[in-house]
Image (tube, rainbow, N blue to C red):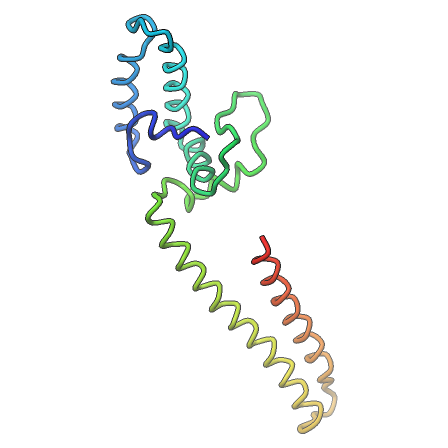
Length: 171
């Protein structure tokens, strides 16, 4: 995937005004009418493509998402009337918009730590449900209450949590 930020010579956190200013200065220098270079037309088309993606907020979010998450071979821009991409709505989330590489690395570490803590808490809740069900079954029976339902639901909950955790790390 082409890095449109490098093409325009701006940073990933640049504002819309900065993008417009960079596009105008580069467009004046690369325009085929003023520049006699053989590759001026291709350079100008690439510059125009970068500007069209970065000036539109939805397209920029999708581009930033794909740039940060490693989708290198897909085009971001699309023409009106054509079908949009399958994960376009997912990339509209403001969480993925305009993230620099340094902050996303910190966020990933924090998210990973939070995921680990949440997994352990949910695993303990499932194991507690199983243990409490066995306690009610053998030591402190209550009339009219079936502790097997708690044991079975706690076991299913624990297995689903562990199975989901294993699938997450296989990706």
